[in-house]
Every structure is written in C-alpha cells, then in structure tokens.
Length: 427
Image 1 (cartoon, one colour):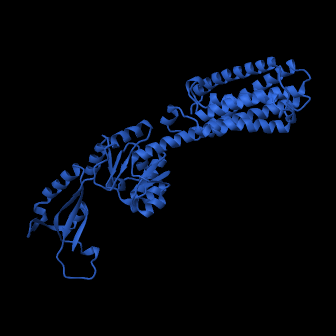
Image 2 (cartoon, helix red, strand yellow):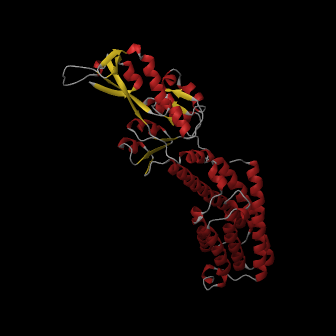
C-alpha cells in the first residue's frame, strides 16, 4: 500500500522510515531530522506532501484504518511560482481599498513564504487548529487583524468568510476547487475561473475567463464606475422630479392658467431624457473609483430635498420674471418656462455629476454632446413649424437673454450649494 497526503497526517501514521534503499529504521531515531527537512521545504514556499508505504498481503479493498505502522519514504515537493505581475496587482488592490487575505490549506510556513512573494509582509497568521480553539465571536474580533489563514479545513473557510461579514466587511472570495464551494456561497461575491471544478463554478457569482487577479482589479474599477454613474442618474432624476413636483403644484395654485399643457410636459420629459440616457457612458472622477462606497438611501433623500428645493426656487423666480415681462401672454409664458425647465435640467447634470467644480471635471463625450444638443433644440424649437401644435410661440430676444441669465445664476448657485453640501454631509 502506498499513501501520499499532507505531511503531518502521513507522518503521524508512520512508525518506520526508509533511510536508504532497503534499509528501514524506527522513525523516532530521525524524527527531528525529517521534521526539520519539512520545515525547510515549506519556508522555501514548496508545497510538500508526505509519501509512505506498507507491505501487505494482496487485498481487494484497503481501509483507512489500515494506514498504521507505515514506513515513511520521503517528500513530494512542488513549487508554484506567483505570476510576475502579482506585486503590481496587489499594490493596485491596496490603492482601491481592497485588503487581500490568503486562506489556504497549506502549512503556515508555506503560507508565509507565499505571502512574501506576493508583497504581503505581515506575519499575522491564524491556523485551522487555532480557529478550533476559539468561539465564533472571538473569530469575528480577530479576522480583521489577520492576513494569513493557514492549515485551514474546507468547512473552516466558510466560518472565516462569515466572520469577516459579521465584522462589517464586504467579502469577495476567489476559489477554484470543490472544497471552495461553501465559501463561494457564503461570500458576498463568489469568484471562480473557467478552469475550476464544475461545483466551484456553479457556486460562484462571477466566473473569470482567465486566472488573473488583474482581471479582478479591472472588474472592481468597472463596477465602481457603473455604481458612480448610477448614483448620478438617481441624484439627477430624484432631485429634478422632486423639484418639478413643487414647481407644478405651486404654479397650479397661484396661476390662473395651467403653467404647461400635458403635451408640453411630455415634450419636456422627452428632451430631458436624452442627456440622462448617456450618463451610463459618462467619465468618472478618479476619486470615485479609488474608494469603495455603499448605497445610502438617507444621503440620496437629503440630496433630493436640497437640490429639488433649489430647482423649485429658480422655477418660481422664472414664473415671476415671465409674468412681469410677458403679462397676459400665456403661450409665451409656457414657452419661457419650457425653455428654462429643459435647459436648466440639462445643464445641471454637468454640475451634479461630479463632486469637483464642474469646470474641473471633464464629462463624457456623449453626455456633453447630448446636453448641448438638447439645449440647442429647446432654444430653437419655438421658432420651428412644430411649435404651433404644441402651443409654443417664439420668445423675444430680451426674454431669451433673461432666461439665459436665470439659468446661469442657477448653475452657479447649484455649484456653491454642492460644495457646502458635500462638506457637511459625508458619503
């Protein structure tokens, strides 16, 4: 019978050792020498298995209980060098606020060697046997301070993942073996590779087509850009709708006529949708990619109220100015508010899309084009043959200049409010 496996388990099952071909001695005589050799292999980063045999009569089946009083034959040592770009990848992950932890079944000496090879200098190691000696709450307290988990059994991987989650971390787990399935299920994001075991791929949320941490880095960047652009849309849509609700309700109460006809409202919504549709392609500030963020409904609510009310105040300002300069001219009043409403909604996207001053953050090409195109179409629409069916009339140049001034003041005011808002309310 020939047996190979984890060195501690094989060594424990051996009573003898073959010191030379055909020469067998009691293993106790060279026990320290064998253990020292194993430690040296491990410290060099070699994954080391034990190899043993036992002379037996021919049998159809062999039971585990028969793996006793075996003869230790030697080691099987393997070296799997890290990829050359791993140091840069780990550095990139740290810049993105991602902490890299290693969970391995290898012994702690191999784990320490591997961690140094990938740029993790920490020697904080927790072994599977040590985990068995502490309760779950103690593990939760410990995990954030540990970088290496060595000699870990398959079921312990899931316990470690759960401990990180209870400690308030969002956990991604990368594994490719059958023994990783439970940990992949437990993680917030289970990640495997195309060459992994089928069970691991089925348990994973994401399957990488190439076995590379760099792909993870790019995936994180892409995810954060998508999240940032999603927030831009939510900020813009909620604040605009909240503000329009107050503007329309107030105008309906105080004006003797409808401020906008139903068809005009639909046209307003259609035109303001064009810049919104290109937000998904917008460029994202580096600061938004470097720091992980979470969905915060309270922050969104505050943003909606502050910028929605600001929008309404300038709508009311527009009402007052239009009533003063266009007395009794209902169609031109509606044309004026339509113009101000669409252009201001388009321009304000350029303000709220970034925490930086809008002139210091370059918008995406398609967002900029659709914003300028929407503003131009809105400004020229009342002068086209299509204006009549919608109930619009051309505005005097003087009124257009006044509306442009109101929009300019609105953009500047929104920029100032944005700076104050982000200083007082953290996200």
